[in-house]
Amino acid sequence: MSEKTDTATASTDATTSTKSETAFGGSFFERWEQLRGREGTVVGLTAIFVAVFPWLFARAPVISDFVQGYQSLATLILIWGIFAIGFDLLLGYTGLLSFGHAAFWGGAAYAAGIVAKNVSGDPIVMVVSGTLFAVLLAWVLGFLSLRRGGIYFAILTLAFAQMFYYMAASPLAFLTNGENGLTGVEVGSLFGMIHLEADIPAFGGMLLGTWLYAFVGLFFVGAVAVAYRILNSPYGMVFRAIRENEQRAEFVGLNVWRYKLMAFIISGAFAGVAGSLFTIHGSYVPLQSLFWTESGDIVVMTVLGGAGSMFGPVLGVGLYLYVENIVSTIQALTIPFTDIVLIKDFGFYWHLLLGAIFLVVVWVVPDGLWGILSRIREFVSAKLGGDR
Image (cartoon, one colour):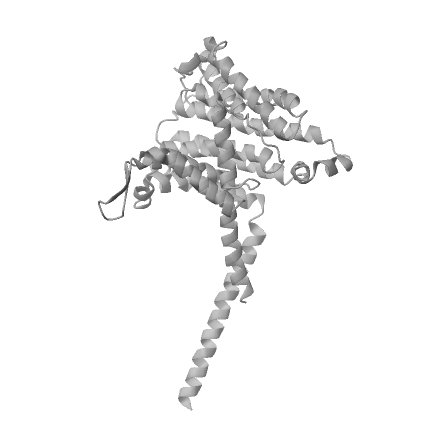
């Protein structure tokens, strides 16, 4: 009798414990669902990610050895991330496919570099001048291109971007240095006293690395905050309405063309900030920054990560740049813990690998890498919430 009582008591305790743990997990996810959509939560978590990313990527024991990342690549990922967030405002949220965003990225990079060489090398001045140039250029190109829609819009943006590429290569070579790119860009000190290439002292240096990364990180957090505020404003609602059904948006009295032009300009502004930071990062502007492949890269990054999501394009940027800069350096692919070579010169085929990844992701999960993470989150949340 005593054994049966003890068994029943133990079973009751185990059941109570399981229910308590499940209830705790469920309540945790409920609280998280309430908080995760708030602007403060999004910006705060973005700031935390920016703070720990270079340490995990380039300096953390074991992790950095496995990932093989480095400080400069971490900075470059954030720069391209800003570009991708802005491009997604146009493609993912407004439904406009542009193949000419290299004009804003490269144009801003050249504008920042020319200002640095002839006026001032202050990083703030460079970013402001490059962004203003991109905004003005986006207004002009948007005014001309948005008169047509669909594939015609995409081809027009591509044509305008290529026109700027060839202008920079020859007629404007006295400003751009032609095929050699804009060299000799000297970036000055921030506020006249902080050298961006210098390491941050004490704990900040261990975590963030250089002042340049901190400088870029501030712009990345600001880009997320601005994009989130836009998407959760009436403007963002109109952008989504245009993406879903442009004709219906017109029927309710919205000036669709004006909203599309504004989306184009905002996207160009993000590209301008990123292009200016790219010049500050490399102290050099390659002519390639205006070529159509740069526009193609940002399309691939955005779709790979997940168009129409805030952080999906950033995931796409990270994967793309990681394959391009780390995987491409692998000399041979071997079986782990052996010397058996499977593929010689494996890094040479990084384009093929990236293409295969892109095809698999788009075919299996059309909403990209962020869609995979969303499905995992929904599965875990349903399990914890459904078992209570």
